[in-house]
Length: 279
Image (tube, rainbow, N blue to C red):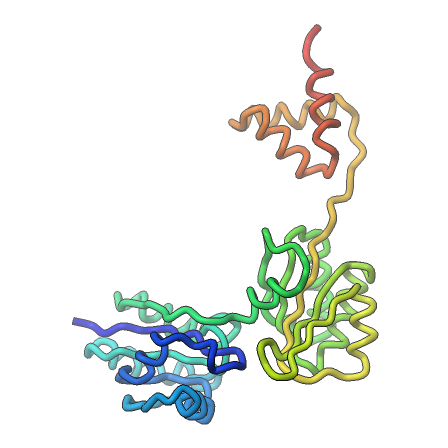
């Protein structure tokens, strides 16, 4: 019988956010693969947990070197707990390589859910959260970063990014140029910690604020693009609806799809379909 890999959600800042299940697994795991051993011991002290399992480091520079040993332990029936410094493993943190290898080996992978900066920042940003996408860290090189942002100019979902404090001002300035300086955004700093700050405003305003220097863990939330209405004749709109119907959509769904594609009011598209009917 093989063991199991447990992904543990570490607190973003407040140890009290951790539930009893993580305490239990920290105390009982045979192996704890952690991003930083010092943070593990600090967290264990804060949670009054005695760690009895073997502790190994698991960060970016040693991930692949650690895989054989961890997979061997899992194959022998061990419970391996994977913990990063904060939030859920694999979300712009170490973990994916081990999860993928465990899945390929037929080993059980489960989790003790916990906080993540992505959804926490979304919730407090004040921006729409019904649809969103996570873009991780933007490229470090300016040209690559600008190209990535330019490719997101028409993204309608709210976007979430991680960014380092010393690159934040440049990233916000590039975002203002690529997405529009008046695009609404929020910079969430040190979430759940003593000096938590959520700064809301336009990208241009936030870029000017960040130019003076910002410290701490940073999550940036940016509003999606507002659909730009296109100019189409009633006959062209009716033809687009007909295309959707030919692809299998019902009338209502076809009209909704064209409204989404064009950014035009539903009444405009509906009236075009009615006008196109044979008299």
